[in-house]
Length: 304
Image 1 (cartoon, rainbow, N blue to C red):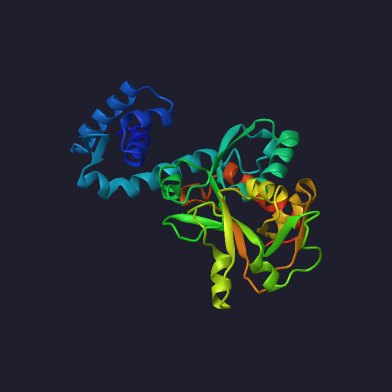
Image 2: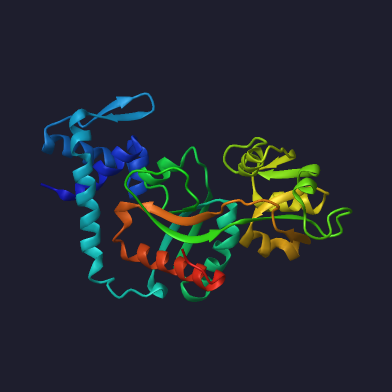
């Protein structure tokens, strides 16, 4: 039995497409098709049926997929762990695909790029935007090595590591005509607001839920998809914006913003990194995870 054929099977199951599987493996489509033909003969099953946009696994293929994928990933680890047991980051040559929102991009990625630029010239970073609607595929289809985000939902076969807890504060532009010092709840709701809503858009968020508990309401006049664009809009208006604290402290000077405590209690959240369990024991992946953890600890002097 030729076990070199099984990675082809794994990627076709993940992508439901022979061409995409070939691309991921770095082989031609004809080579992938030939491997699939040999697998069909070896296993005595059709394995995949043609569909309008690719292929669909047979019942037998779905039944064995989990065991084959686990075996393939274990063989990868066995093949590399001995030589990489004491791996140095300077010796890694690899592209890491990281999915992150602009919050994590601003707080963590710049320091990561700085470190890698000096000490790991063989590492490439591919940063892609976080999208709640497609995040499941990022994990299951092996489209991302790491997801760096605050995840509301849980996903099967993923491992998570908490990085950084932060609460909220609010900001206005320096020179604001009315808000000079601390801000009261009445002042807070009287002013126009900018809402940052990366996932869903719209004009209602966590702050509005908290205000509703108090029987009051604010007026959101701008809904922005990114924190940095929201800060820029705040800098050019008299609107109020609510921000995660560490981001607010980082951008206050560049955007010329004054920061204030919220006039009500609001819980914070924890940023984490998340990856598919198939990468748990990948030694190179472990090195980059530990580096991110160290960067957060050194930069923000906290680790949850």
